[in-house]
Length: 126
Image: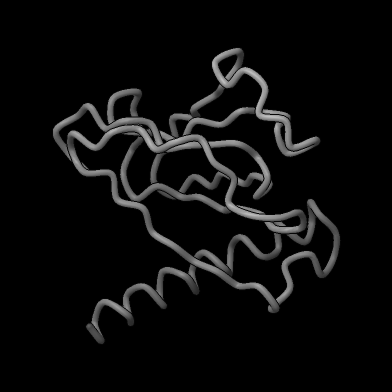
């Protein structure tokens, strides 16, 4: 458990070092404050179904996502519904979505209020 916690702390530190200056530049100096640091890891196993559409939290927070593997249409990229952070309206989620096909070391920043989900992993790898 200590090795896992240590590895997660190192990953969080590395992401924070890169993401914090970008968040401050985009959302204003001090936007990436130390009051609400959070980190998480999502693993999409082969055969995993799509997540339900959801928001991660309230106004004022930013998701910073970086995949550890190359994302393809088959292995469960993050699907975003642009504009849903503006008024909280779920609207017709099928009307327009985008799922960026990121590579390791790419960063995706989005407002916590943006409606999103992990797509199904139809591939053979995590």
